[in-house]
Length: 226
Image (cartoon, rainbow, N blue to C red; front, top):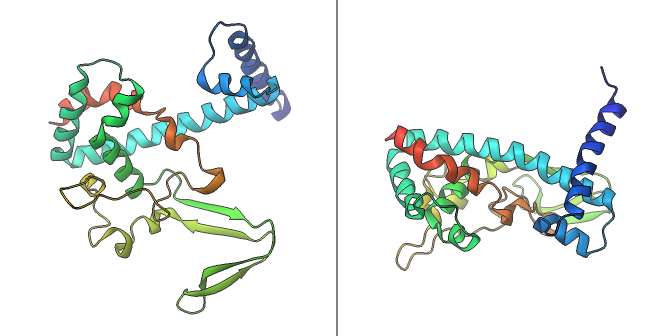
């Protein structure tokens, strides 16, 4: 059995072979191209590639599971989503086409609201600071956070707050994200943090990396659920 250091070395060597292959190719993937243009060394490129692969694989699998679980219980949502996806006629969508699949985006947003992939999250303070809320018996007073203290928040609970998402906050309803006439749908804000936020927001928020995987299986699976 390999030791921890030997396992890490084997993984590094595996990724390094692909980095060398891509650097010698005439075209690079967007992520490697961006790193190469910034003068990043091969070690940083390897670390970035590992980060993307490991997080994207697990989160995509969890998201697919949650989406299909919800669709199995929501036939009307499934039918509407299948109709939208079928407008692609089985073709691989462009980035612009993905952005225009508004109901798909609503389904994904709602799935991550009801079942966030990372249900709890935290940040460690780098210096003493005061948060405007969280203190006192009612939680509405300021609270002191000392350096190196860990602040943990529950996205699962926050995403189901009825004062933020309405009396049906526990219900899977993608339509809440869509504009309906003069009524605006929900927008991503600090009430909704599946990818966290701020300068260290997860890059998966805009990558749309998981959408082709979802589209690949969506129409056929929805057909089985009909």
